Image 1: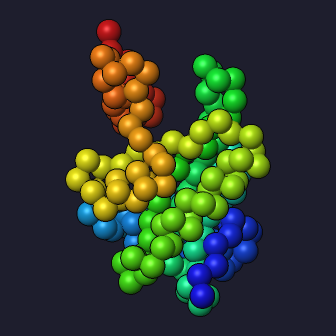
Image 2 (image 1 turned 120 degrees about the horizontal axis):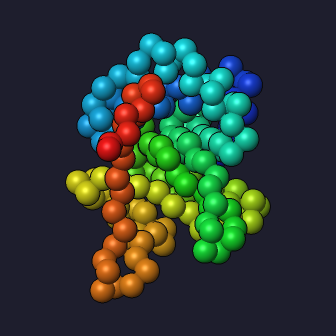
Image 3 (image 1 turned 135 degrees about the horizontal axis):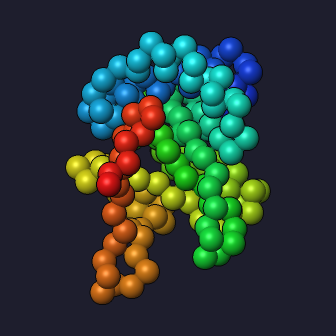
Amino acid sequence: MIEISTADLSSPEHAGATLSLLETYAADIMGGGKSLSPHTRTHLVDELRNRENCVVVLAWADDVPAGMAICFEGFSTFSCQAILNIHDFVVAAEFRRQGIAMDLLAKIQEVAVERKCCKLTLEVLEGNHVAQRAYQKFGFAGYELDPEMGRAMFYEKKLSHPPSIPS
């Protein structure tokens, strides 16, 4: 039986499942293909627990961690409402094709509605066609304001400490 719930990161079981599933995701080619750093393994759960804008949703298959989403609340200035971003999303390989992704997305949407969010957002790799189909099936679409201007692109700039600022 599949059970979906928001995580209580003060629970060792939920904290362990979150870390284990994130490690699974990170080690996968779709998560970068590298294990989590020792620093991340040691501090992640506490850092997530300290962020009020963080929601972790877990899927359990007969008490075994099967899937997870780590989400963060943001804000839409144009709508003047909260948004919920799905930052990490994983279903363990042995539990795929059982509807767990749709169940996780449904729970995330329920949380977003409870928080009065105006939309859900996420990023997905161009090469992750299976995930793209799942997200599209759930109702996600590429973000664009005006078709003539095209879809939004996702960029990142990794920061050193202190960050360098171009002149």
